[in-house]
Every structure is written in C-alpha cells, then in structure tokens.
Image (cartoon, rainbow, N blue to C red):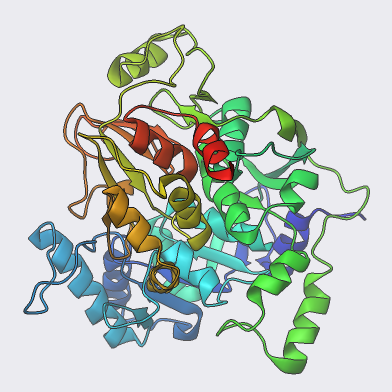
Length: 469
C-alpha cells in the first residue's frame, strides 16, 4: 500500500499500535532539552527514583533564559533576573547528575536548540524528535517527524524513551512554480499560514511538496517547517533529497564512511510513494507570493505588505486590530517602526544574516529605530564574523549580540517597551510576546532590514534592486 513520508516514519517507530481506547506508543530517537521546560521533568525522575532511560539520546543546550549581551569583565553573565539565572544553573546541575550532554556557556556549539541540533548532525532523516518547545517542527525539514511536547511528556520521554500519541491526519501542501526574486521562505510560510488559517493545520502533519520547496536551501526549509505549529499543525515535514544529504555530510553526529552510504540509501526511501493518499491537499502558487507580514496578533493574520488590511470579521479580530493599531483598508507597508529584531529559531542562521546584511550594507538604521541582530548559535556567530557580517551590522547602527532566543520570547532581558512596534523575524506575534504592550509584525530578514533603514515597514525589493544596480 502506498504510504506518505509521515506514515513511513510513524510506522517505523510504533511500539504499540493505537486503539479506540488508547494512543499509540511511539519510540523517540532524539530528545532535545533546554532550561525552561525541563526542571520539573528532572524533579519527577528524582521523586520516583527513576533513572534517565537513554542519556545518550538526550541533547541539552542553554538558550531561552540566556542573556545575549557579552559577559562582564569578571566573567559573570548579565541575566535579566535571578529566576533566569536559576533556570540555567538548574539545567547545568541536572545534566551533571543525569549524564546529559549539555552545550552550556563553555561550549563552542551552544545555541538555540533548533539551530544546534541540525548543525551537529543530531537531526537526521527518518528520526522521531521531541523537545519541550513548540517549534520542534523545525527538524521536519530533514524528513524527521519532530514536534513539541509538554513538561509532563518531557518526563515521560526521560523515563521511557517513548511517548503516547494519537496518529495525526496528513495534509499535503503543494507549492507550485518558483518564488519571485526578493521573496523568500519566510514570506512563503507566512503566505501559507495566511491562506489555510491559524488553525488550518490542526490535527494534521503537513508535508510541504513541489518545485518551489525542492528549490529551497536547508536553512529555508527549516524556516518553513519551523512555523508549521503556527497553523495549528502537529508537525511539518519535507522529504530528504540531495540538498539534505549534502548539508548533513561530515557533521559531527552524522554517520561516516560506509555507515554514511548505508544511511543515505535508506534516507532515499523516505519520500511519499506515488499514489499515496493525504487527508487534505492544498495548492499554493509560488509566483503569487510577495513580501508578507502580519497585521494582527497571531501568525494567521498575514498578508502581502502592499495589500490593504482586511476589516475585522469578529470581536477577536477587532481586538487584534486595535491592539496593533492596524487600520482596515490601509496596507502595512509604510507603518512606522520602533524596533527591529533579526534572530530566533526561525531566522537566525547564516543565510538569514547574509540576507539582512545584503540590504543593510552601506546604509544606516533610521534615527530612532533600534535594531538587534542575534545569531542562532556560536557556529553561526563564528561564520558570520569570519565573513565580516558583524561589521556590516555595526556600521549600519545595529547591535550584534551573542547567541540566544533573545527578543523572540522577551524572558532574557531583550524586549520592547509598551506600544513599540517591532518588525521581527521570529514566529509569534501574540500580545505581549516581545514585551508588555509591545506590537509585533512578523517578517523576513530582508523585510526586517529594509524596515530598519526606512524607519517604516518597507519592501526589501526596493533595496535589493539598488544593490544589484
């Protein structure tokens, strides 16, 4: 029987099949851990006298609560508060006690959990991957089944290396044609979420398919899969191909030698079979995608920046427009900007920073605008600095920081003030997400950089044309 990519990975990991009364028991290949959602799970192990079942399948990092300002002269870190510092110290202690590999402050590979997993080659096709973080779907870019879990489930996986799950439905999102010049993966995924809705993927695993998807780099595929959860989906996946294999080859945790050849041979089978049936299929015309931004308080409220903001259809949408001060009938393009943030697990990789630097090169951030650029990992920071990107950002008047989640979640000292409008390359624009009363507009790195220069939401193609000329 023909099977989808999702079904192949799911079937390979079922320990006990789902019944009408019980969920399936699914084996987990990789458990990613950070400091915010793990303390209670470690405490539960202690309380029950349980060992960590597979320490070798757990990978931990410090990212959410970590400051992105450099250390003080005495080596201390400028934590936002005592609670953030305590979270970091607790994970360090837990990892020592339970024998977990931790990429902490002294690691050359520390960074955002969904950036370093792929960088290290810990993320590979066909795996099941979980983390106590919504954006675990990022790893689906490699043909893995990856999804976020709650703190109680984190404890379950620590104790058993398995998870109780109901089998989701499948949705194919076919992206036909090619994206226009100056339009990227972030524009595409915002366009998709705006099309199917913030709950359009609820109950489904999304598989992104088609010529436009196959043309994306791995960084771009990670951006697309990262935001699957923002359409309500359980996960997002892209079939592995030559682009995937080339990206993974030689990474520290990737197979080597004959093991690599065998792995690639197996990974090539992880494509949906001809004739495989999906529960729902959606078609997207890549040529119709423009630079896209959000105008409300969830990612489904997304439109091309030159398109008029739609009128509120209900009280919830009215509240969103009022909070954002978005005006129905008026496009978001031209809206004044206070803060610009380039970073997060959605858009903090080297290609994202290059995209922003290409727009910023030789230009200045507008007066009154604050811009933060935060690399996703120490590896990204090293590579960016080797290319001189940090000099481009500094010359433009932006702040170049050390790796971390930063302003995506505003729990680490990086936040906007009440009423300020932030153009952000992150993934969520909920009320207060980037600071109490802050207003978030999600956008691509190129749009963020163009908006920083203009002091208003701006079309990056205007600046990219100038660079080309």
